[in-house]
Length: 303
Length: 320
Image 1 (tube, rainbow over the protein chains, first blue to last red):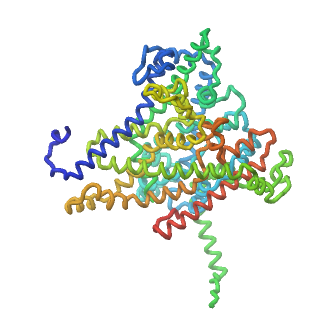
Image 2 (cartoon, helix red, strand yellow):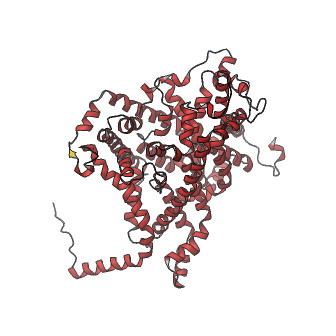
């Protein structure tokens, strides 16, 4: 079809190339469908009638649309409070992350930074060798962070990978002429970073903020080992109980009497919960996607 | 053999060198101030646990602390090597890692090569946007989705099987299917994201090479084989080295969530084992668990160095 619409007449494709194009588009389309179908199914199931879901009547689009699943979620107190907690960890945590990452990446990007080589080695080595789960747990315990909000924020305050891509971004975008010119005018490093580097770094800040924010939103393991207090639980821990361990107290969300009815509602609740948990991130990320090229690609490839 | 006498700098010269160093450090003082906080983080949260890993060679007693506990040498390591679980856990870890590497590694490359030949910008953008998306789904939700889809009674996969007249399968209760479910779902989730880096590498391939090849009448297949693949080879090798270095680092979170009493024979890997021995069991075997964790970290480091060395000699490509 698109052959006809093409404005410029191109040299006719050879047979092999035409076959290639066909196969290529088929593969890509198949991949898209395989990726999309589960996502669409979950959204459709979450809006369907619970009986229709468990009896396999939902295939692509919602059947007898209802909002029962979502209603059940909002009645579940633990889900609501954990969503609030997750927002807290995400916002405060990301703020810490981004500030610390910039503070690490900018000096490392400067070729005249005294000790840059040593610090870089210190940084990269942590990617290759890890003290292990137990010593880390003992450290957090000794610092008195167990069962506090800090346990989810401070130990994960810096990702080495993000420091490296940010550093490379600075190296590529902030020219040394710019720095020299500013230094001539008597601008010190703090001012230069604040007034000149940061305003030029919106793409990379957007990208690392997204990475960190998603990381916090999706984080469950640290909460699993560091938190016992239910009132501090992030969403993922509650999700784990409901989705994976099937522990859901239906008396909290519905007054359905019959067991079968309860069971069906439980399945429906799970689908709605998946949508609520994954939705915000999936809706957000396309806005940052256009920066991936600028941020990640420059950051990860050069040097 | 000739002995080389190290060049001894004249004391005065050395003094001047030191002064120059200090001067440079002083000139970077603002950068040092900036870096101090991240440095403190690194030392406390990355290097202190490495120091704390010494409890692998001690009998750790909480009241005595890391320093005060008694050295016992290789006791915990040997106990692990000799234990019934050792071979099973090691086999599962390595098996899962290789399965994942062999099946998962080519998919992002194929996707990137394919996308690279798509002319319609909008189609290309859409494919990218859609295939990246699952990467942002959390592990818990991912495993939750698997359990929903594969549920023996209400899951859509078994609904479909029933529809075409096949008996329902309880997928999660089959130890022999665990690795396949893990690997395939991981590809579903991460292959799109993984292709970004290859797309960037492909963008760096000089267009003149392609033009020349087209003039010479090379087909697209040949251009992929002779131009694109060599063009992204350095990136492929770097990523291969990195994933070899992470071979034992199977996705703890996902494996742990996918585990159940029935599939534990194939799903217990080192990371989950450490967690259970160290933090869940009543004995609080901190030292034993640390020893297992340390064993894993050391094997990882050795693998990374070895593979890097091989790549340097064979492919003239390496991390350092």
